[in-house]
Image (cartoon, rainbow, N blue to C red; front, top):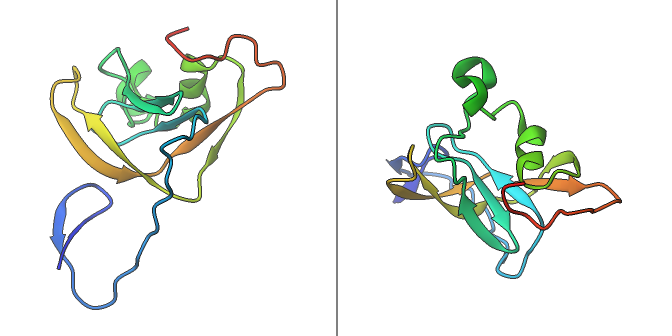
Length: 131
């Protein structure tokens, strides 16, 4: 059977399969992010997955990629879009998301981990956008 590895590569699979249920997140407006090493980070604004408009912020670490690497700075990445984020929590399920290569030039669909951006009590201007 054809399958997709966690890094998005197509693989042949035989033997025991692990079924990972997908949740319907169509109407989920929870602020959240997803990262895929080598691709531009994604954030979910009002229920829609959007690529980072800078076209370079990625899933590498700060020590690897400098200010473009957010793999070890998920809280800071959430705060880029929702300044009053006070913590980040890995969701118990993954989502299918379209990611883009550097410069937001080529798209790739993949099922990835998603991190919820937990907002503080004073929501202020947490409506999304590049604030």
